[in-house]
Image (cartoon, rainbow, N blue to C red; front, side, top):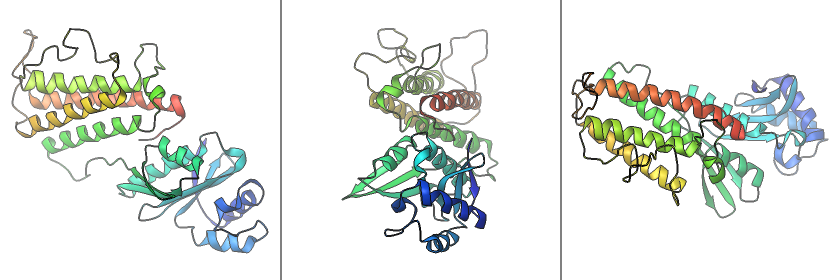
Length: 307
């Protein structure tokens, strides 16, 4: 299992051993370093100890990753460990540690020529900005609502937004083919799960609670069940735009109502009309369940784990 171990003096020696025989010198040290310059390596990494971690697999050291107090990161991986998702896993674990440090963004710098680093950054959903031959990467850090938030109305809305953001982050970095490919017997794919939750937002908050006149809120205008499938010509960008539109309208509806307000439209006569509070908590549990399913599918797709 890939893990991170805080760097200490023994760890510096393990990194040196790997760097000398199983790494590219330009990756592990500033330009000009050679494996026989052991003392320069030790001095450099001892200065990084507060911010650096060994990347490990059991007792084996595979490389190094760092996370500064301002959210800057960088990593290198042994040649023999490349192509196995080690860098992606290490970077995901760095993002988890950034959450505990109350950082909102993890940033990295690379070049347009470093295709391996760019591939890793794309897989973890980093936003990339190209400036000449330099590439600036920004990875959003998932942040739960504030620990001292006690108002239930604010808390349920904040958690709902947290899950909305998590859903989109879990599909960031997937290729179009991966986003459309199902790995489960029921046939849903990552992008159709996003579409389903867009229809869930539309059905519960626009059609049910606000009473908006939406024809076939959980289907196409022609009546076909649409939320788990892609229509001919429908792209991942179309689904994302539809989802974001529904979330934006949901926020408008919730902002203008009270938790005790009841749904304007309801077709289950045997049950009372739900309150807005009930609907919002129902949405939170539905998101939590589906995002958990997406966690597993994303890991099976390309090995990416974490929040």
